[in-house]
Length: 206
Image: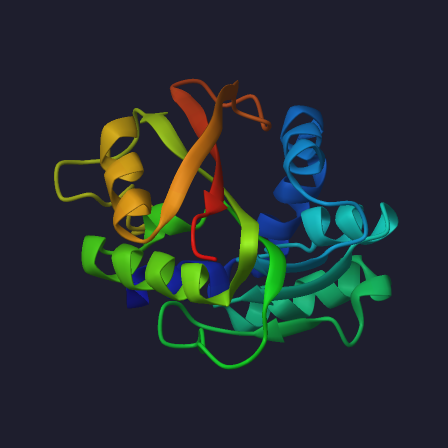
């Protein structure tokens, strides 16, 4: 993840976490539940305030939550004490290991677009290797962001790599992940000029 992006989250973790906690993510949570096996072992990439990890834990999932910002990890622990021992600092893509650990599902909400295109591909390759057979990878990325400039940075200095739906589909297929379902959604914080694409994919490896 670009240093300027991580710098923003490290320096603004408290107010960012407060915004995340106030968002209406009902449709997103329904989408997550619809694609993941109840009680499954789940990895979250980019947990932010811990909002989504806490929700999944409350629904009986075994969740390991991660974030590339050490300050956001602390906010997740502060906002959701129930995540204690289940949230760790992990930077993408190099923090993902292709060891013996396998997950029934992995999800990344509003995370992948902060990476460069090569690092997006490296991350999804690693995700594929960490999924159990038929495991699911769910991710959300911008369908529209009116505040991103021509250099792929927003006014806060955060990177936003723009890809079309076909672009995301092509990367997933290269990594043996098949798109199962997509969902378009508005912005949970009610911001104008922002919309989201949500993808549910399945690991094709046996």
